[in-house]
Image (cartoon, rainbow, N blue to C red; front, side, top):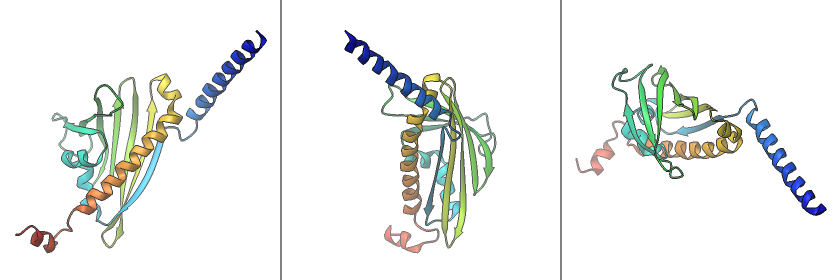
Length: 194
């Protein structure tokens, strides 16, 4: 009987330590923050379209099934609102993520505030830096706050998974931007038969 009490006590202690560890980690200074940079062999204005046009966004943002612009807001710029419909294969239904442009400095800066009631809210900031010679560095800096208590507790596990997705998305963005022919490239027209 003593060994059952010891095993149960050990399991309870492990559970308490695990929850306490998650709670401490979820309250660290950079909780919910994700940052990544990529460099592209294209000028900033060529990459910008891939970050703002719905038909291009769905090609590089993983799980993005549809972008629904809010026609009651400006067509672009600060105050523009749109909803991203995410089709995460791990979820039973699609998730609608409304976003509002909060920073608009074409072609170099873009900021978006996203908010899913009772789940999370956050800010995503993109900065494109002209490196010269037709090269661009794209920096993405995001910070999310989880509103659901369980999700907030699990942040130390959620954020690294979201970071892996962000890295994959950024690599797809680089591939898509660099697959475009250079502006004024006559070889692209020649290869298409025109």
